[in-house]
Length: 294
Image (cartoon, rainbow, N blue to C red; front, side, top):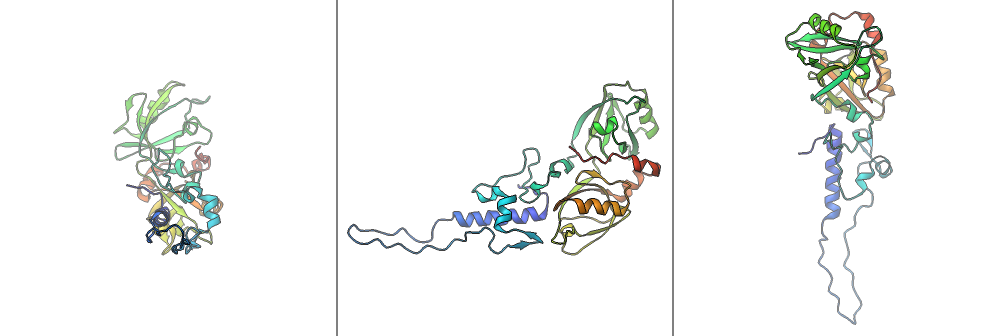
């Protein structure tokens, strides 16, 4: 079964497949019989459109002219359909041009992280307990935690082979404090409460949702946000892997405006977000790591 990062990708891929099936269909006319000594008569052949998507100069606010397809989707000019990367198994004829797509996808998989402490004996992260699990709610810019790739919402399952399930925030911080300077090993589940939604800007540069204090409060009818299942009462966490937690709405809007036509946003239910940041000082938001994922 094919998987797509956005509804636009699915629609375009299906149209490409239909176009290719039509172009590869056998001729409806039988082969002409030719008798030696008589002039050969060639049966008329049905005209095949030379331009891909002849009726799709614009689709869902996206330009799909032949030149744009040749520039951005050259794989669709050949007779094979190419899927996404081996790790993602996503078919993304439009979104594959986004460099942040693979980095933004939330996998919910478990990975091992090894990090150290800085010269002040700190790792640069803060943890919070939610439903007997322990989650990352803060990563300082330039800290060992940031360099190790930890992100807001990651669930910490173990620290140096000590299971954290059921522990309080203070107990987890105490384990980190007692840990050696080097070789701190963590088992981390990738952001279990979060999901990524891939959106496409329309001709005006809009993706179709409104937000207040980073919380999504409204969707525009027939917009990319509405078509791709974006939900209200969800908090914006990342835009193309840039952490926007604690940003003012004007700053978030500037990040969206500066984004390319494909916008990958990471969201979390608002009530979980509020619980995770409930004990954080507002001053910490200024020190959050906002470096795009690499």
